[in-house]
Amino acid sequence: MDSSSPPMGRELGATVALEPARYTLADGLTAANGVSGFLGISILTGAWGIDQGVGLSQAELLGALFFYALGMLFDLADGPVARRFGSSGYGTWLDAICDTITFGMLPAMLLVVALQELQGWALPALTVAAGYVAATIVRLARQSWLEQAHDAASAGGANTGKPDFTGMPSPVGGNCVLAVVVLGAPPVPSLLIVALVALLLVARYPYPHNKTVVGGVFVGALLGLSFVAILGLIPLAVPCILTLVVLLPIALFRAARSVRRA
Image 1 (cartoon, rainbow, N blue to C red):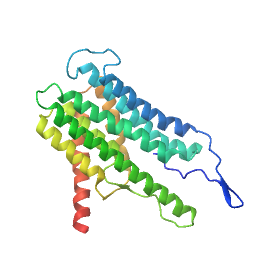
Image 2 (cartoon, rainbow, N blue to C red; image 1 turned 180 degrees about the horizontal axis):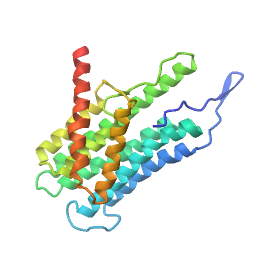
Image 3 (cartoon, one colour; image 1 turned 90 degrees about the vertical axis):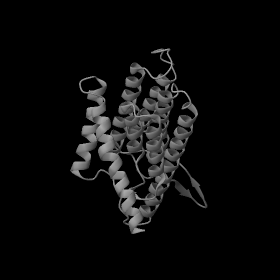
Image 4 (cartoon, one colour; image 1 turned 135 degrees about the vertical axis):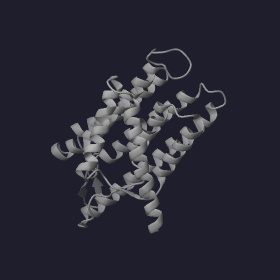
């Protein structure tokens, strides 16, 4: 992710004249993440005319998953691009906005569309989905504040190191919600898992970045398997099961360990 420091102003006497930075390639990649999320949502609203029936069709599911995976790809790429070619400094705020769309709103919308055809489950699905979106917003706002505070401390000469994520990262949360929908879990466990993910998003426990080779390889492999599954070369259940048996337990373990240490 692009978490570079905000653009600096130029002090003129007692006033500060802010000079807007120019947009960079990294900003474009971050914005492309948000646009991908919007396109995925537009499929689920019927804007593409893929399917006019009630409920979630296979074509709509694949389209939404494709744009979600594309958003993840852009989200992974913007940080390295910013470090290699420079950044405007807008990355912290752009990330929060775009991640809310792709990893918050898109999975929530997919959950609602998948459950709305089941009699009596439309309102519970909408309620839990709204809670999940709210948790994503709060988690991303908190992380933006932490990164801004880190940048301010670094500018003051403090060597604080890059701050860890606090709570489950929004892409991990979105993966878990999508996995529940794709696997077709019954409504009760589906909504309970999504509610649990929402709690993990806002929980205050450290969730380290993918600093290790193993972590980076797993994330890259999971994204690659997702595209392969969308193309129909392997079952969609493969990346979904990996998400629920690896990523979700890791988050639960880290949250439980944080509680024990408190």
